[in-house]
Length: 449
Image (cartoon, rainbow, N blue to C red; front, side, top):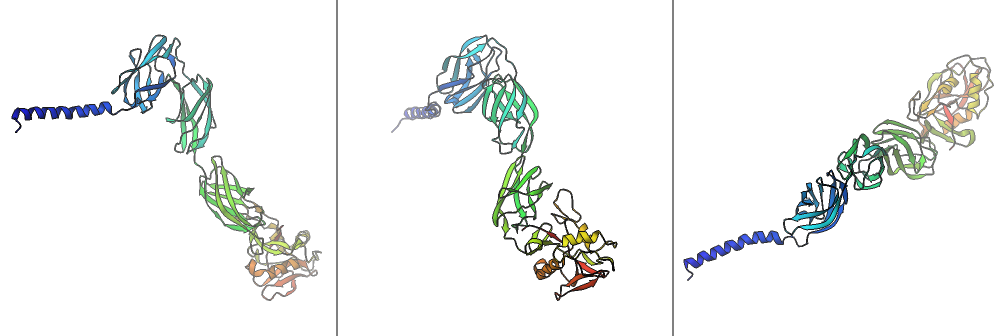
């Protein structure tokens, strides 16, 4: 049986063991010895204030750093392998750098730092190029100024840049950090903590994105107005379809851009939009269709693919529901059955009745977005004419694909001094109509398929 004395002694021993366990654990928690691999920079002004970085092992166990017995202030443990602090003032000359640890004996770097007899000079930052970049960061920039020293750092709105290289005392290169969109200050700070800031000198911008293209398909002949929707489209400089630049690129606002397609082989293509910030593509965002009657193009609808003068675009709706052809009893010599453009010009040079069927078409204009009259910034289609007899018949043949026809239409072909050729779109019959009758007009324009 254990005596009271023995039990008391045992209790004391247990307490000592438990107490030691905690303390001993702290002492043996660090297996790697305290090691210094480098110090940067290795010199600084006698005035102190140089920001030094000490790299090695078990840096996170360091509690204090001294330069020739003077405390290095603003100690910051960056990681297990790195710490920083600001040198104290000291007379010129080489000094020992000593690291103090909570676990290991002090570690001395003999003559590890050189105090110079020169006062530190603050850097000056005069320019940065380029002056804008993306919010994701990673843009390479070049800074110009004076007094840049080895070990200098660069901050964008307080965020450290990466890959900083001091090329010379007047040039630094670096990569931008990520940052929200907006204008920020840029700062260069030498190792001596002296710095200079160029206010509002860099702009973070957002990349454009394409959400949709409308319509999603169109004629291989081109001439189709499209609307591109997305974000950050302000400043759009180009729109391409499979690398082919669209025309009449018009920035409506930050989410909308319009453009007109050029001719391209049939098939699905990528649509790319480019701004000063960058570009974005919508894969297979538009499909070119084999050119066919009934497709929208060049401000109207493809009406005939008969070749030559019979390759025509028709207006999407009647341009007049009732208008006179011209003067009864006045011959115009506009007798071509194939060439409506020439007939129209001839009629306008002779008739005295205005407006008339030919003048309605001559004055018609529509832009790539369907506006009449045309609006600034959009492609304007204004080369319309009154179709000749055979061209009008082509409209009748393709009336279903074109759409919107009803009853009797004037052609530009004159029959005699009193009559002009007309066509009935219900029966298809052709005949002569008195010039002062009120018949319908559907204007056309030539195009190249």
